[in-house]
Image (cartoon, rainbow, N blue to C red):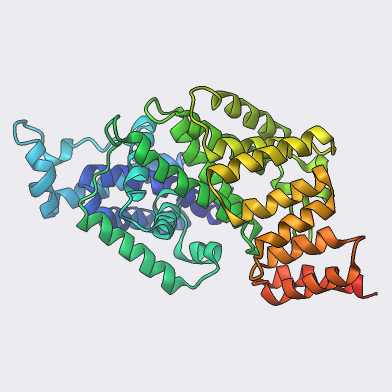
Length: 410
């Protein structure tokens, strides 16, 4: 990997690690200072490596420079006298001796604590996701704007407001006490679930970005699954769900960047290693007596790793959707249930159930009904496809719907 490729790669993998450690040392109110130090470190790397070539260990080089810049900041800024020096007042330690611990253990602990800080209930959900992408995953504003299909100004505003909340609410970088961890963990898992969904269901044409979003969500969830205080059945269920979905990632889009529906996916492109990991984490999630929506969605995703249609498969999926909807209703889950119903009990029963939903402002609703009316009423197929075309938001969606309309117009 050359310098032009290596620096963006290291920025993605190391930026969040160093930032989290520095925030833990300085206090989260100095998050922007920590970001500036890390950004300056990468800027110096780009300048130095461009002139002198790559160092023998680029990651170690970054860590050393970041440590030196952090010590220089502590030496000259009032944060040292107000915060760090207070903790060291009974010792002979000077600024030069301050330990800036960039060991794997401290990096992991710092990122976990940062995750809980970012996912504080006082911060709006969309800002939690944006800040997680920025601070924990190393995504730039342009990339976040692409993921949310919005402009950079909106993302800047969200990030500024979220960072201001971290300061004004005096949010601490720490794992919550054992008695509170489950309540706070729910917010963290919701953010990671939405982060993964943003990648998996995104209509952005940037497939690399889509995949990176999923990978980062899985990485952060894995950190929770491996931590003694947070490795709950619900965490394992969410990680299982992510593994099952990711196993079909490569098959969901063709070479033209068009979405491939489940029935037409090439099973040979499915990642069997991720399927096995999904089964592993789903088994670990089966302990205890709590059944979360992640358990049910993971079980549904498990059945979708069986390509062959069988009565057992679709009846199982249908019953799982019934339980999911009784636990937490969602229009998308209700739509997906009607597809499973069509497979288990036939299209006519599914059409009756789907039309009861009356989700007429959703293009997905009309696409589903167009699918269900195939071989039953061609005029209804055409009607729902034209409705879906009017409601579709992206060029890719519109192009795919137009292709279907052309097929039924012939």
